Length: 93
Image (cartoon, rainbow, N blue to C red; front, side):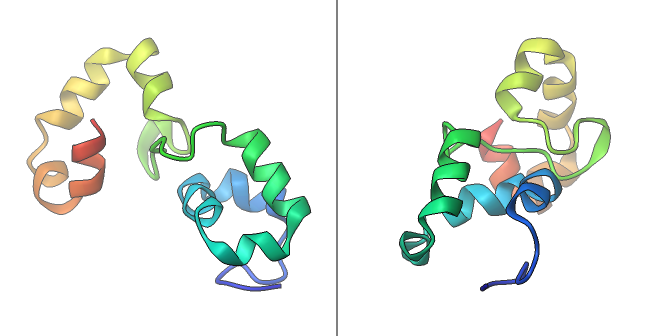
């Protein structure tokens, strides 16, 4: 009923854009929607987790990627584009 995904299903939004859902969990407006809040709290146990928004690990948590493919994390850390243009991702690495 609100925001950039107005009239969309929260389950679909969580799959499409988990970073948005993590951000949404921190917003006071969510108190007006207890069902949505409960779903997101269950799905996103750690709202501070960072999720990839591109590439072969799109919508995967960094913690999961670090466990399963640490070389990919190293690749991201050494990527100049990530360092200069995707600072929040770089900081999360």
